[in-house]
Length: 223
Image 1 (cartoon, rainbow, N blue to C red):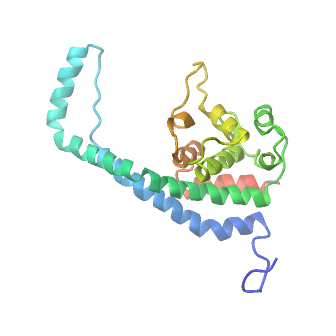
Image 2 (image 1 turned 60 degrees about the vertical axis):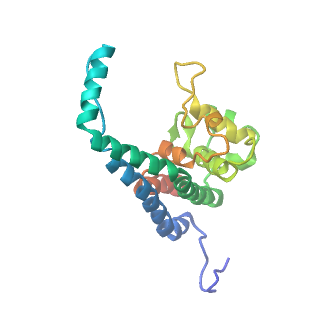
Image 3 (image 1 turned 90 degrees about the vertical axis):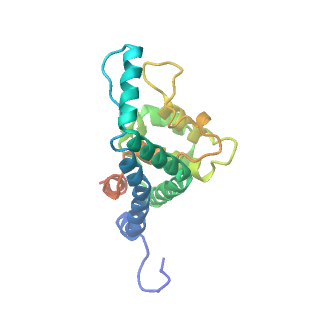
């Protein structure tokens, strides 16, 4: 395959793909951080900590604290309000990160043996099979988390996901030891018509480009 300049093969290897998408992915992570950093700074100093379990004592202590820290509380409320208003914009950036990761796996995935959980999730899906790779988070290979996260982001406006995608979310949402309790961050019933791409990148531990790069190199360039 020749690139548009007609000089040399274009992204024929996983290493080339990761190199050529790195500048875009870095900028996406910088964009995500630009939404998170003001929130962190805005809520700084607005955390109330109390000892004991007496409700009356708690209320009295909080009332005094709130009066003494009214400026920080107002600043925190403003920062949180502004952050919530930008959630969809941040999800768009996280969705783009997942898209780049998804395409890299789709182009350069190295087959591996399916684990018990991955086998149950993938079933007969040949499309999902190549994504059942990488370290596990909550028992699910991260390749499948990337797969389902990307697909949910791309189709968040649709009534229902395909079986494999839904199975990934169902497994991730389980809370061990608490039957019927689900993690609200990845319980899709709590996010109708909304992308959860940011929650998925957080679950992956992708808070910066370095973390993303380590995982993608491990996924695509392992021996």
